Length: 437
Image 1: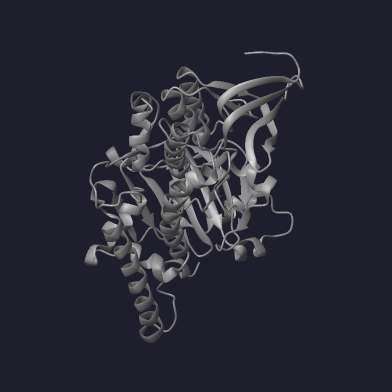
Image 2: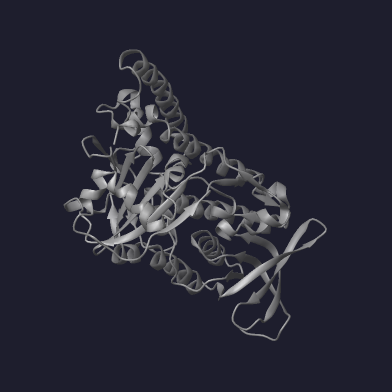
């Protein structure tokens, strides 16, 4: 669709951003018969991290009609593997051992292809997708969002879209958060990640080929995410101590390789591998918003919060929040009421799941808590609770209290374990992240 400069268009819903959150919410609403426009400032395909999906992405992909495409394009992921820096201690968490056994696998995806697939599917469902268009302004009448102003990055053409609801799916650009001053710092400590893609990294055989590898070491942890074919995503998430010890002039490649060379479990898997492109980095990535909705608008995915990459929750929370937001939006249309109160249930549900992930993530950076990942036995259901979080089964009320108890118990055991180390092992050298280099 094209038009003259400053054209005014009318849609039911205006969505800012065509990443997993934006494309998903647009798809659900278009399937329900709503007239939806999406503005995306970039052009697909484009690179993005967050490449490991969780099992509870699968029912969302099924609802969008995308499972056949997922099978063609991407490798299945049946488990998450955890290792210490040397590889001497390892543990595998098959998703089939979660509290609910319904979704025993997920997928590892190159985001350039995955995000493009989601966006193209939205277009097939009738969404008007405008690539290379930037939204700089959300229109308000009094305190009610009533549309957006967008500009073509290529031609400079400007259009105004009037809509009943605006969905902010702008990712870490956090359009509404900046506009309304809603951003809040996370309680998680400052961290950074250095990452690249490698060809011919060593993989596990058979059905284990698609397992994500998570390797802990004294400055943080690594991810190793295998894609279909011979490419593997490798990233090092590091703490402030690592950054403080960087030598003057160290670039991102030097930082990534310093971390690799200090971690035999990673270095050994890369001994015959070739790095595909210079390392990139991100930092200070954890944040949230004081609220996720207002009169005439709602936020989904990273536009509302980003926690941490460790348990691969980003894409899942983006797509799940999009599903929940679309349900709330459809109720708004039925009631002809687009006020903030219509999104109270959405926000409560989303914050509850984020709280579970956040507590688990915070524990991951506690060496005593992390040590419990390597338990050999499922003591009082602790390992079942771990794999249930790893599978992202955090919205099902049937299992919620069982899950919360398992997490509470794990923190209690971590406290006991920490005291045990202090009393009987003369310090914390036995703890997984504190092993000497």
